Amino acid sequence: MKNAARLQTIQKNILTKVFLLLFTLVSAIPLYYVLINAFKKNQYITNNPIGFPTSESFTLENVIRSWESLKYTQSLLNTVILVTISCLILVLVGSMAGFAISIINSRELKSFYVSAILIITIPFQVIMVPLVVMLNKMNLLDSYFGTSMIFVGTMLPIVIFLYTGFMRSLPKELCESAIVDGCGMFRVYFDIYFPLMKTVTGTVLIIKGTSIWNDFLVPLITISDSDKTPIIVRLYSFASVRFNSWELLFGSTFLCAIPLVIFFLFLQKSFIRGIVTGAVKG
Amino acid sequence: MSSRTTHMTTYQRSWRKKGWLFVAPAALILLWIVIFPLVSGIAYSFTDYNGLDTDISFTGLKNFSDIIKDKNFFLILKNTFVVSAIYIVLLNCMAVFLSVILMRVGKGFGNFVKSMLYIPCLIAMSIVGFIWRLLYNYSDGLINRFFRMISEKSIQDWLGNPDLVLGSTSIAIVWFALGYYMVIYCAGLMAIPVDLYEVADIEGATKWQTFRHVTLPLLAPSITINVVLSSMAILSCFDLPYVLTAGGGPGYYGTTIAISVYRLAYVSRQMGKSFAMAAILAIISMIIAAIELRILLKREVLNQ
Image (tube, rainbow over the protein chains, first blue to last red):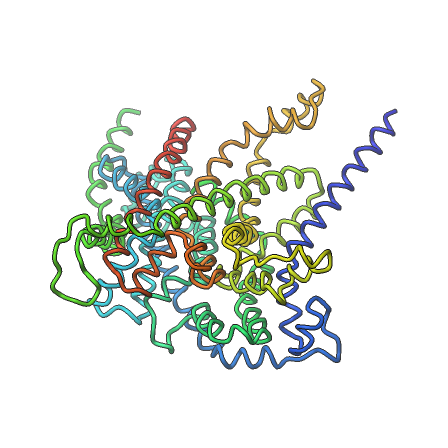
């Protein structure tokens, strides 16, 4: 009797696994489709779109040609610059604000916090056009700094939310004993709290770093200088013109997607942890 | 104890002033990047500003009435709601279902599934748009090749048919976002104490009863978060639908408010109308956010 029941659970378990495996495989088809066709000669893409590249159909030409037309290294560097500037400012400014909000008990700071949270609900499209008009007047279009500041401004509320939530969870005694030891506010922040914030900072870097890396609309409307275009916008302008050359589309899509995927495969655990803390707190 | 309390109040008092130094950079950036453009955008929406001319005249509600009178306005509004509704329901149901059954399999296999489903989130939405545009392609796309094997009649023009384009768009966005939301639900499920399931088991509850009366109520916080996150994200979602439908086609059948704001501003250069459209988007998302945040903040208070 007991054995029969156990057998049934095992069978059910296998069914669940088979279902999950099938689901995963089906949803991986688009990825597989891009991956294999990036390395196939054009006529094989149309004749046999899901076949694995053979010695006959394999080619590196799609990737090499896409690399050249995307100006890959340069546009990748542009993306890296944008992500770095934005993340540095986000982490510094966000953690400072979160620190003050969580440590100091004052009505003004609380209302600042609430208004910052309300900003999360404003869709970017609402401020998009006036923002570009303003940055244009300030000569900050086509500059890494101007574009980064848009990312910083729109993402800051969530980052403040994350840091505040984390610092509220730390014991109050931590700050109090530091004060008794004679630490000033800046020292409490830099020497005691900042090193403790590694996990939240990791979350911020992962969540916001990927969304800045992948953002399309902000650089599209702020950067027209082709030497400063990040990779995603470059792919868009390239692909809209050459939408009929599928082999180049596969090659360039592959090139654009691969850096973050590799990054993820190395840092899977931190990514998953980052999303969970990010979502539970914000 | 009392001396300690006084000490703390003194530091509170002196730090209250210094605290502004810590908040000032954030406050200034928000004023500069968000509040100022927001206010000027609202102001511009009552003028005939076109982005170039310096002489601007006040036109009252003309932009708004122009938009509402536009024969495509209600179509665009309907599109936004349809895409959002399909997306929010499909995404959250699938993510809950998958994460619940993921709890039943071993950790190693579970992590493999999670990672595989998470990879699409790492690809830029605009790239996902291109990938799905290839998949949906009428003559050579993978999806129609599959349906052609079943029967020639079952193939569809996924992006060209006005009845299908919104569904096709939603499915592509669900494919992109599923892994992210699933990870959040999995974390929520992990937090449910195991003994509750043991009790349910002893009481002889069926799988469905356990899900309905144990899992679902205890997963409610994650559901609230995910519904809020996904509805905010979809209302202003631009990249993927724009690329997938090649700018909101066919005609206006694939155009959402987010696409329309961009098109009015940068394609047809009708800045005033674009501002007004953006203001409408803001009102819609604020109403939805207000309803949802109310629930969220109430819970946050209860937890403290």
